[in-house]
Image (tube, rainbow, N blue to C red; front, side, top):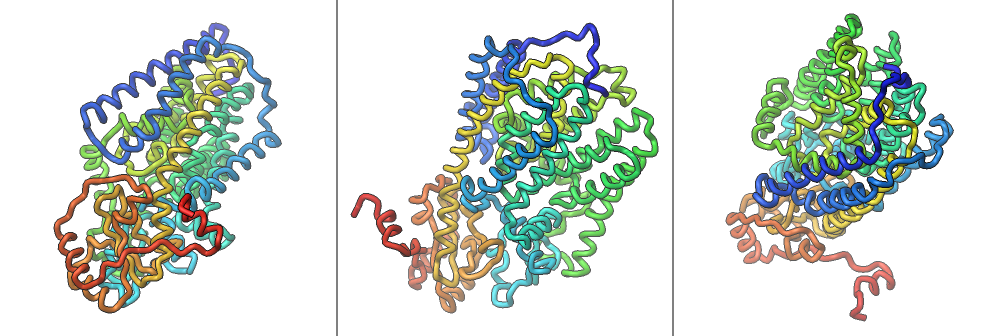
Length: 584
C-alpha cells in the first residue's frame, strides 16, 4: 500500500482526541490490572512484583502527563530533516552505544536471570570450540546442584549443555572472539533499527513524517534498548524479524531466498516457534494477494524450520552427546505444542504482561497502532493489498499469547512485534494525521521521562544480585553452597564466572544430599552464602521454607562446615575508607 496517497475525504483525528483516548484506555487497563493482581491478589508472580515497583508508577506518571498535555497537543512542532541515511545512521549508532554502555552501568556487568546466564554459559563453551561443556569427573555427582535448571537432557550425565537452541549463544561467542560478548545485543539492535527504517521508507515513500513517527517510537522504546543490554535472545528476534520483512518487501529471487536464510537463523536463536508466529500472517497476506509461488515457498521455509530445529538438531545432539538423561527431552513438536497449551491454561496473564509492555514502550505506540488497524480498508485487506493486515495479526498473536515470562524489561515475548507495532503506528499516522509532529514530540518526551524512572528502578532491583554475585565470585573457597531460603530468586546466583563453572564451584544447597555435603566438607574448603549475607545487600525477602535444608544446616554446624562467605578485603586505602563508611 502506498501510504503517501491521501483520499480527498480523509478524516483527520485531532491530537487532543488521540491523547485523551489513549489516556482513558490506559487508565481502564491499568485499573483492571491493579484490581485483579493486587486488590484481589490473583496470579501473584515476579511480573506483579516488578509491575508494582516499576510499571505502575511509570504508567501513572505517563497517564497524568498525557492528560495534561492533551489541550496543547495539536501543532507543528520542530521541523525534522528528511530521514535519510546521514540522519538516521548516527541516531541508530548512538542508541547502540547507549545499549552497550548500559550493560556495564545499568546491569553492572551482570545477567540477572537464569535464561541469560544459560545463554552466556553456552556462548562460553562455543567460544572454546565445544558443543557442550564436559562435566569434570569429580563434579559429576553434583552436576544438577551446579546447573539447577535450563539444561539440555542430551548427554546430561556427562555434559552441561544449554536447553536453548544455539544461534543466540553462537552470535555472542562470535563477538566474544572479537572482544566483548556484550556487543551482540547492541549490534543486533542496530541491525533491527536499520531494517525497520528501510521498511518504513518502502511503506511511506511520500510521507517522511510517517517514517519519523515509526522510527521515533522505536528509538524511544525502553524495552528495545534495555533488553539489548542483556544476553536475551529477544533482541535477535526483533532484528531478524525486521530484516526478514525488509527482504520480503524487496522481493525477487535474492530477497526471498535471503529471507529464508534469516528465518532459519531466527528459529534457531533459542526456541523455534517464535518466527513462525511472525511469518504466518504474511503467508496469509501473500495467499490473499494470489502470490501463490511466494506463499508456497515460505510455507516450505516453515516446514524446514520444524525439520531442522525440532527434528534434526535434537537427533544431532543425541548422536554427538548421547541419549537424553536426567529429564525427558522437550524439543519435539508435540512437546512444544503441548507445553504451549499447558502454559496458556496455567500461566496466561494478559493484564500484567501487557501493562509491562505498555510501560516500556512509547506511550503513543498503542493508540497510533490502533489507528493503523482502523486505517485498513476491508476490501483491500481481503485482496492482500493491505500490509497492515499481517502486521496487525502478528501483533495480536504476540500479545494474545501473554504467558508468564518471569524476568523481562517490558514484555519480552512480544519483543519481536515492536517493529510491527511501530509500522502500524506509522500507517495510522499517514492515514489519519497531517504532517504536524508536535503530538509525537510530546509523546516522545513523556516516554523519556517514564523511561528514566524505569531505568532507575531496574538498576535498584539488579544491584543486590550483582553485589551478591561479586561477593560469591570473590570467595577463596573451593565450593560455595547457596542456601536460597528467605530471598527472592536467590537460586539464580548459582552460576560460574563469565559462563564457566570453576573455583569457587557454586552449588544449590537444596539439591544436595547429606552424604554429598559430608563429602564436600571433608575434601574441600566450603563456604555458605545465605540470608545473613544477601539480606544486608538488599535482596528482596521471600517466604521459602524447606525442612530438609534445616537438617542439612544443623549437620553442617555440628561438623564445623558452616563458615559464611566473607566480603573481599579492600585492595586500597581508599577502598577501605569507602567500606568503612562513617565509622572512621
